[in-house]
Image (cartoon, rainbow, N blue to C red; front, side):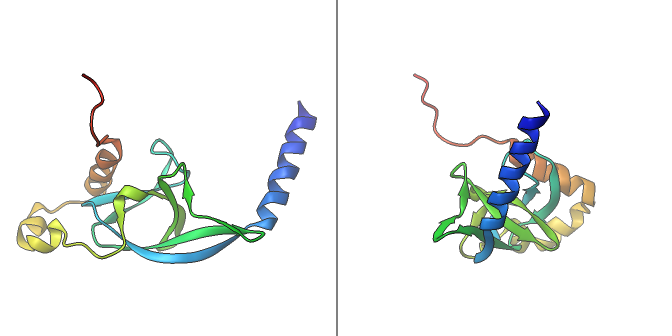
Length: 136
C-alpha cells in the first residue's frame, strides 16, 4: 500500500512540473452571489464569495502544446483576489452584466447583508439545479 502511495505522489509531481497556468481571459460573475471552490465540485470547500459583476481571472493549463480550460466541461480555473480555485462556468459571462445590485442600489443597501449572509446566498445558488426536465 505504501508503494502505491509513493508511486502516485511521484506521478502527480511529474505531471505538475509539465503544466503551467496561463491567463486566458477576464470574465464577470453574472449571479447575485457566487462561490470560488477549492476543487471542481459544488460540494468542495468554499474559498470565497463574490458579488455580481466582480471580475474573475480565468486561467488555462498548458502542457506540451496542449491547453485545457474546463474541468468536467463546466468548471474553470479562476483567481479572485488572492484565492486560486474553481468556479462553475454558468456563473460567469464574457461581458459585464447589469446586476440586481446595480439596478436597485438603495433597496440592496437597505438589506444590510453581512458577510455570512452573502456566503449563504452564494451557497444557495450553488445548490440550484437548472435546466429542462426529461421526465414525461
